[in-house]
Length: 189
Image 1 (cartoon, rainbow, N blue to C red):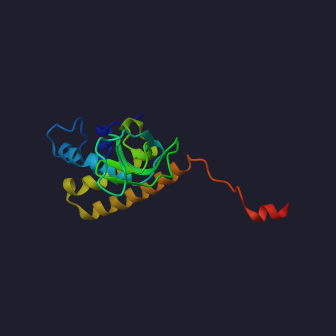
Image 2 (cartoon, rainbow, N blue to C red):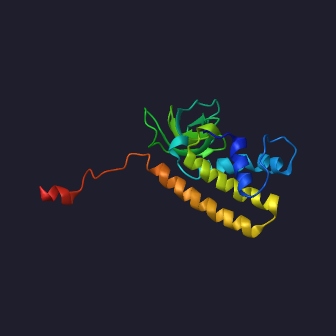
C-alpha cells in the first residue's frame, strides 16, 4: 500500500508513542511538528543518495541571461530538482563540465541533459525507502514531542541503520558491472 505524507508522518508518530494525525493543519502539537519537519527530512533523505526511483533525466531550458563568468550558457533547473548527478550533451546524461549556481546550471554547451535526483510523489516511494523515511521522521519528531534525548539518540541510530539497509536494497536494482577487460582471464586463453 502506497503511503501519503500524512501516512508516513502518522507511522513515525506512532513509533514514538504519539498520536497519529489525519491532516497537517488539524491544530495538534503532533500535526504542527509533522508539518514543520516532514518536507526538510524527506528532501534531505532523498538527496543523500542517488536513489534509482528518484533519478530523473531532463533536457534543460536555456535561460535568457548568460552567466557572468566561467561558463557561456545558463539553464533552468527542473522544479523537482534536489541534487545533480551529472550533465551531458548530444543525448548523453553525463560527461559535461558544469556548475550549479542558485537555481541554474551553467555550462559551455548549447544544450544540456541533466541527470539528477528529483522529488517523486510520496505514493511512488518503494517500501524500503518508506521504512527509512519513517525511522528518520521518528528521530526528528522525538525531541519536540517527547523531550527525551536518549530516546532520540536511539531513534537516530535506528534511522541510520534503516538508511544503510535502504541504500543496499536500492543498489541491487542496478545492473551489476561485470569484468570486461581483465588480463588474467585473457592470459588463460
